[in-house]
Length: 185
Image (cartoon, rainbow, N blue to C red; front, side, top):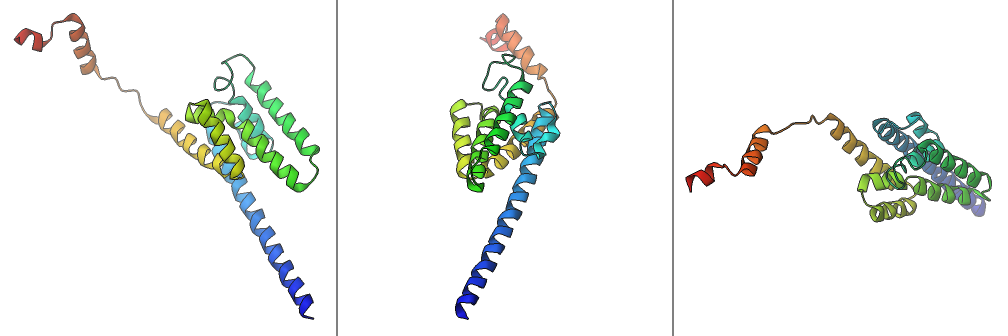
């Protein structure tokens, strides 16, 4: 009878653990989708609402390659995104088990988000390191980077352009050589 109680207790713990991981996955999915939507909307990417779909994230991440990892206009950004989405679906279909699918999804997501990581850090090396960190943290790093990048884009778009005319006059007078300092000496 004690053996049955032990197995029942382990089963309950396993079910609670699976429920906790499921809830954690839902929260990760919602946060990542929200921040990816904000970044895609600020960057005027095609179909930013796809940030909430599993393989739509690959589509949006692939669009960020244009100008960040590939030369601007070299490839159609929609084509790059579509290639990532199709590759992700193929990897998903050919996955052997749930663990393989989860691991391959995180790896594909990190590769697709490399354009976003590069745009955020403005360095290819740091972008690759962020992609590796995303793999290690099972996608949590992407949420943090998307949050920080969406904040940066929001502040860049909301800051008005202010020109300092006094500094421009000072610079022009220095270029002419007629500064007050030169006149006093």
